[in-house]
Amino acid sequence: MEVKLSRAAKKITSSSIQELSHLSQRCNAINLAEGFPDFPASPHIKNAAVSAINSDFNQYRHVQGLCDHVAKMAKEMHGLDIDPLTDVAICCGQSEAFAAAIFATIDPGDEVILFDPSYETYEACVTMVGGVPISSTAFYVVLCHFCFWDPIMALHIHVPLDPPQWTLDPSKLLRSFTDRTKAIVLNSPQNPTGKVFTKKELEIIAGECCRQNCLALTDEVYEHITYDNLKHISLASFPGMQERTVITSSLSKSFSVTGWRVGWAIAPAFLADAIRNIHVKVTDSAPAPFQEAALTALRSPPEYFESLRRDYQSKRDYMIKLLAEVGFKIDFIPQGSFFIFAELPDNCPLLDVDFVKKLILEAGVVAVPGQGFFNTNLPSTEGSNLSCFYQKRYIRFAFCKSDATLTMAAERLCKLLDAEGHLVLH
Ligand SMILES: Cc1ncc(COP(=O)(O)O)c(C=O)c1O
Image (tube, rainbow, N blue to C red; front, top):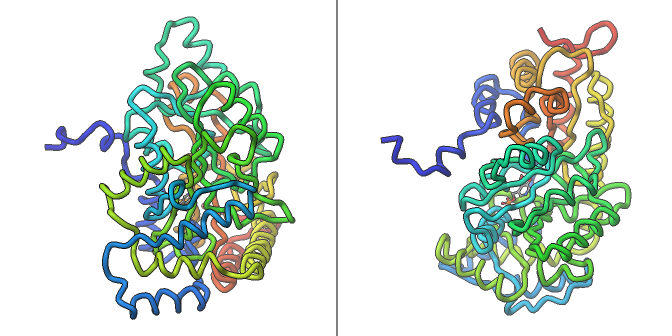
């Protein structure tokens, strides 16, 4: 009966992360893989949730005050004028807001520009509606040109950000637009690299979106987690962008409550309305008590957000030092989010998946092989050339963990060092 599965279901299979996660559970490995905190949320937020449950907020619910506050924050952070009655849709986390935004805008055959590497969920959502994630690589352009290869058949190919600094090459972006391009997806601060797109890069993306009359779907879940005094800038704040941008975000990362499932989309009224309608059909409403608690969370004083940044910056610095000391190449220091995308040492013969397997078995620490964040469906000839080799040489470490967890991980890694202080896996 497996033939009865849809094309999308057959394509969206369990990732290497999930498979390695079984192995890591068997080995009781320290989890530096998954992007959720293992420390408690702030008491003022938890108390608000407890109080909402005790007040019997048990039914489907729309908390308008939450939309009001999301609009207020967008004004304060980005100067955006948002009508909280029409331009905000509350959803079950950024994940649902983003999926609903894709369902609201993308038809089969539409092209969606994604960056490479990027968070895996975007590609899956585009696949579910039959859109086409699209690339600008020279190989692809040449192939299309000379072989009359219909780009509509190209699958899962993205605009590469160039390592080691994950720089956006404007020419690669510009040639990725076609007359079928419907939207571009931007995640800044970024998972997995920790890149915060610069004002100049955002200007280029915004300029091209306007020129090509295309939509922008942004994922800003790490909006409050930036380092070294860098500020997150929303793509929607550039001239001509608010009318064509869907901002998605959530409570998950800013308040260490990934299981509460409260997020939102901010968009022009016609789009927010479409997203809201899809949300109502799929889940009806986000969890009522947690919507109430979200109000308290978003009203947290500036000191809350300052200490969030400070704490994560100190965890970042600790992990950067550790990983560099045990031999990883850290050419790019994360500017935001809570991930380090570390490159394997040149002399390491292993690729990412095998490295992580050994890391679990021998060090009792689990991280994520980087290849899952890169385009997986390169045409086979391109997949074999050297330029794609780097995609299997990165490991993503999540440092959204307690200091005790990070110290224990350091102890375990340091047990496997050779005389020169480098990690040895057999
Ligand atoms: C870039 C990015 N977007 C979205 C999410 C999920 O957000 P939510 O919990 O609000 O669905 C994650 C979780 O890891 C993420 O890294």
